[in-house]
Amino acid sequence: MTSSATIAMAPLESSRVRTPKHSPNGAEKHPHDQPLQIVWRNVVFMSLLHIGAVYGLFLLPHAHSYTTMWAIFLHYFSGVLGITAGAHRLWAHRTYKARLPLRVVMAVANSVAFQNHIHEWSRDHRCHHKYSETNADPHNASRGFFFSHCGWLLVRKHPDVIAKGKLLDLSDLTADPVVRFQKRYYLASVLLLCFTLPTAVPILAWRETLRNAFFIAVLSRYVITLNATWLVNSAAHLWGNRPYDRSIHPAENGLVSSMAGGEGWHNYHHTFPFDYATGELGWRINMTTVFIDVMAWTGLAYDLRRAPPSVVRARALRTGDGTWKVEHAY
Ligand code: ST9
Ligand code: ZN
Ligand code: ZN
Image (cartoon, rainbow, N blue to C red):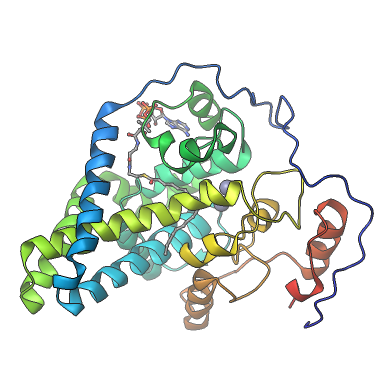
């Protein structure tokens, strides 16, 4: 549909998100009931990583153009195949099914991304959805931008994350041999696929210097992919419209979507987490949906799940903040 008219809405309450003391899942909302236990090893590692990444950006004018293209390729390969289409939409949410060759390539891409192995990533993400904005949410956005962006990776987890996480059903992940294999050889796969190969290829293939290859194709690329991912947990939980459910933090954030392969349509995603497109707009600012559709066309992906437009419309009219537009439907 092309009309941009806003659907007539019932009178709405303020779009400000209310945070009740308890979530419907029984997890406590109080954010500051535990002293922070800083993990200094992670603070040092992340700081050095970011300093190295900035240095890598300064090296760009001195590097071979192929090195920059290689870093961009690795960013999208690891981000879209490894994280958004793989860990997120396939393994964490089971929004579609994938045949073995595709699962193997996505697991390889996931190790290039170095964001914890698929099993851990999916477990924490299921915790995040089930206990959003409570102490059992690993990156609880009610603790602020920094905590939800990367602070949560620098401190010990809240005990509720571990206690509630142990109640999750992860049997589908344990049953997948690709997930089991990647978990077993995770450290070796990261050393090879995130660090060694990305450095070796530019040196061997177009005689790049070790310094340019390592700082640009490894550190800058890795840190950019990390921050694009983290923005979904921070910015897309704080800023944007809430057309589908005004009572939750996750919001529609086009800027985050453009940087995170289509994962910024976060109010839609938290309202309809089973939908493989994680947004209502089809291919618009959603590279991952394009990728999954192409895979479905080849037969490597199948059983794609989608929220019916009538259900989306009814839900938007019932619980949205009033910003849902007819043009969202297609
Ligand atoms: C990273 C992850 O960056 C990013 C995830 C982002 C998610 C985004 C989602 C949206 C998708 C968007 C995609 C956009 C993509 C963009 C593409 C662009 C094109 N349930 O962990 P420990 C157990 S990682 C049940 O040590 P501590 C655990 O099994 C970055 N159990 O906790 C263990 O048990 P056992 C690189 C749980 O000590 C025990 O608890 N990686 C759960 O508190 C202790 O576990 C890093 O930086 C759970 N949920 O330490 C590493 N959780 O002993 C960071 C834990 O029996 N991690 N358990 O095995 C760490 O160093 C630590 O985990 C810690 C916490 C310090 C953070
Ligand atoms: Zn999700
Ligand atoms: Zn979220």
